[in-house]
Length: 522
Image (cartoon, rainbow, N blue to C red; front, side, top):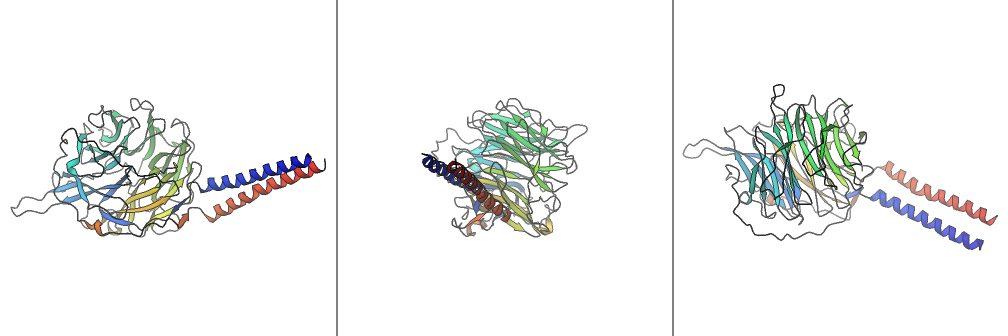
């Protein structure tokens, strides 16, 4: 009988050992690997791109640019337009010709404003976009596979009293549209201090609620990012400081804040600063929700040039202390235009993918577009999406398609004109690359569109007739090799994981041997 007990005990301990090793390997692999990035391709001239992927897998990219037409034969003066450029692709290699989706005439010529497009495609296949000139507009197109200027409808101006700048819209699971934007609020002490406002629409953009100020800061605001958490709470993070136009707030007093609504946008909690004890400059805040249900924010601290992250386990009511992300640095001490930003998105496993511009090696000369993954507990090592020496990358955005396809866009400032965007010789270009996360794929969805019930509403003023040169049609790239994974971890991580995987079973074996010895010897 004692021998039977010994055998049972040995079997149980073997199962525990094997289970531990397998679970450790599974946790280690979760979100920690991806196939290599494709070689970046250039989509066109411009800056501040945005990207979205719909449920069919179609990739939508838009960005800001300018058209300057020539004097015609009758001697009429030239006209210039601030433009939202747009293209799309089903595979990331073959792109549709670039079109001017929106073009707002400059009055007078040369009085240019950056259009700053921001878009998404909802589960029903409706394309939503916000953009700006001096005003912030929202518009939509009912067919995500046919995005043209003539298809835009429900055009709505969000700001009222003064100029607007940043914007973002999202749709929640109940079909309610949420819109945040910044608008200047002049005071005697701060004539240029933009604030964050909120509106909502319960009829898919037909009508909108009154604007609701939600930043309530004593200074300005810029770069708001909105997230609807799993509970339905609406979270908004943003930079705060004097200003808010020209794509930034002041580099002197900038900090990062968070506000949230727990009642579908009706009321908002007072905006709170992340790490108020850090009195130096904080920038580039981004927000996401991880696979554990935790909220995570990432931002840049200027004095250390490091990225920091914080976690909330109670839907934004409290936050952990800030922890630096090791192994990488930001671009603050290299090129601090103040107009950069970070972005995060989730794959089908709810792993959080972060893209940013910075460095991953000491004494590195240039700047890279970098990617890291958060598995709910730790960060992967950084992998390089694109690297530059001389030219400066900026404003990376990421979208995840079909569960595991990572699509990243950014723009570059050419080395000679980093600080002179208005120079006619400046070369600012939009770039795209694609990677594959170690997550399950999601099957493409076919949209079943309903026929329009009315004529499209008027488009914004002065749609341009010019279109960009279809330079993207001939661009190609090497296809991804799914059989050549690149593991995102260091040699130290490898040694530690090996040590742990060997040490724990060894300890269990020693315990097992001691128990067997005691049983046999009474």
